[in-house]
Amino acid sequence: MAFCNKKFITSLLTLLGATQMLIAQSQAPFSIRLEKHSPEAFPALQSFVWAQNGPEVLILAGRTDGLHKRQPFAAFDQAGVQGKWWVWNTQNDSVWSYTPSGFPASISEQLSSSNAQFVQIADTLLISGGYAYSPTANAHTTFGYLSSVIVSKSIQAIKNGQSPLSYFQQTADSRFKVTGGHMLSFNDEIILAGGHLFDGSYNPMGPDHGPGFTQAYTNSVRRFQIQVSPQLTVTRFSSDYDSLLFHKRDYNALPLYMADGTWQIGLFSGVFQYSADLPWTNLVTWTPQGWQEVAGFEQLLNQYHTAQISLISTAKNRQYSLFFGGIGLYTTDANGNLVKDANVPFVDHISLVERGENNQFSEYLMDTPMPARLGAAAAFIPASGLAHLGEGLKYDALPSQQETWIGTIVGGIESDQDNVFTSNNALSRSNAALYKVFITPNAAANMRSIESFNDWKLMAYTENQGESIVIQFQQPFSGKTVLRFFDETGKMLTLLQTQEQPSGRYEIKLERQRISGQHCIVEVECGNSRASRQIWLP
Image 1 (cartoon, helix red, strand yellow):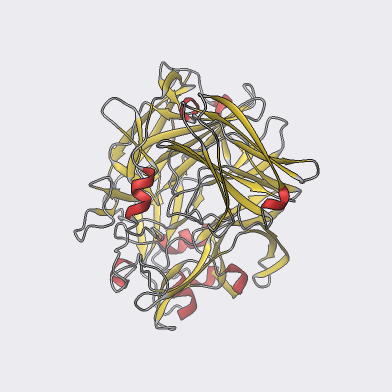
Image 2 (cartoon, one colour; image 1 turned 90 degrees about the horizontal axis):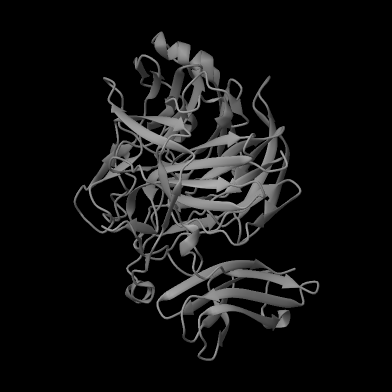
């Protein structure tokens, strides 16, 4: 689990308050059922790396404790390092492990890290970066390595009690000194999206307190190709930079199959905003040809990295992206309403983001919850033998109104309470139980639309070749609306206030010259309700 960077900002919590919102019920495309089981000797772990070879799964790195401590001397300590190589058979729950011995320091240290980026290409697992204590550097650091593992041979070596070291390659490269981002495969390239560099001991009070630390978001989507023979080599490296839209870490990312049959990369919500220790709620789509924020969509649930999977229906021209538990900006009250919590608590939500036939996105809260506050820093490992379209499961290949096991939620953090960050007690831990996920297409099941409580319907864009900025919003109730404009560092650039006006749809225009820089954030507020949106300024 990477850095929670929450500070004790009383004024911020007072400003945001707890906002309650109603959600409307609708028919779900499938029902969900979770089944818990606990294989003997299976480890409790989180923030790990994994790859598959048929029904067998290779698991590396990660941690064995819960949410990191807030004291610098205790956060990300060596006692919580997950140092073994594991193999798990998803069909019969057999488990094998191997304790590395005699590995070079650079390899053993990177494989002690958490929140490394990884992606599997055929039989090769690629691993970049990760954060942990380095005995070599005598400090916590983000590792500047790209490594490759031959999956099938490593699995067989571990099952035979042999070292997998000969199937491991590593190259030092500062371009991969990243943690909390995502690696994905896109066409013939590998994508390294978002994340940050963090060197030093974690301190919630900031980089200038105690021993101090260095932190820098990559604000980029990097793409490259590799050669693994005769040695691991990076080729055709390039990078797209956006200090606002790519300013994400510890988030969820998935390939998106669009309505016209093309693919994009979806960068969902994530943390943290420049002006506050709060998650982003936007969705950014990326291709090599360009990127954009999805207008009018906000993801209000499951903001931190969690177990995730997509199901793609070409017959319905839809993609269903599921997010299981984790940490989010909203909890649910006794009446089923969502309540904003600026402490960003652990939640038990299962949410669905649907890409519709016109490429519109909608968010839903599934009626089936997680069995506890768990899912953060977990993985969803698909069941073997299912039909795939890209990285997603083929929804149309699943039998209608018949239950199908689609995969398993593995590891992650389980929390006893919504908010445990400020506690000195051990109120969270790594999860050792496995949760099989079953879905039944076209079964009687409910989900509740989140779209109905994005009351502001805020849109922000430029026109006239970027000379004017247009802000459109739905004022949810009568009153004065305040509009604030911030630059990408959180500095307020300008402030506007409307006259007293009734609820309704409004539009405000202002000249581009009033806003400096290439990016800004517009925030609208009326009473205790507020919304924000990013703008790219050409």
